[in-house]
Amino acid sequence: MNTTDSSYVLDLSPEDYQKATVEVAFLLDAFASTIDNIMGGNTAPVGRIAGRDTASKLPVSLADPALQDVIAELSKQMHAGFDFTLEDDGLQFKSCIIREMCILRKIKPGGALCRLFHSYFDGIVNGLLFRPVKSTIISVGDECQLQTAVQ
Image (tube, helix red, strand yellow):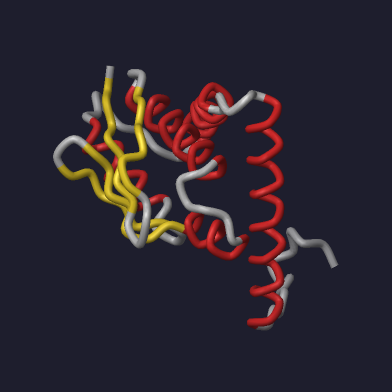
């Protein structure tokens, strides 16, 4: 059966989802660690380039958007894995699938994977806002806070 068939159904158990989550966490950790080692810790350009590329492919069209508009739209697009809002001058991540992956892999949130993700996120915002964006991780924990600057 072809996976593009409308009658194609994949029956996955909760155990299958758990195994997939562990595998994705492993792959994300390996990917971020490798990029971090190759780039000597300076992964921001890699993340931003990938984010801008992703932004160009999103089914989003915002006319003359402000940062608040872009963040609100991305929050809707990414709600399955993230709960974030723009408050004052920064982003507040209440829930984050990346943080969950860090915890699963027993790696400290705020490290290489988080930095790469937030550079990627900045690239997406940059691509939708048409202005450079830079976020700095201020705090990590049950909720993470980033200072976000639009240039």
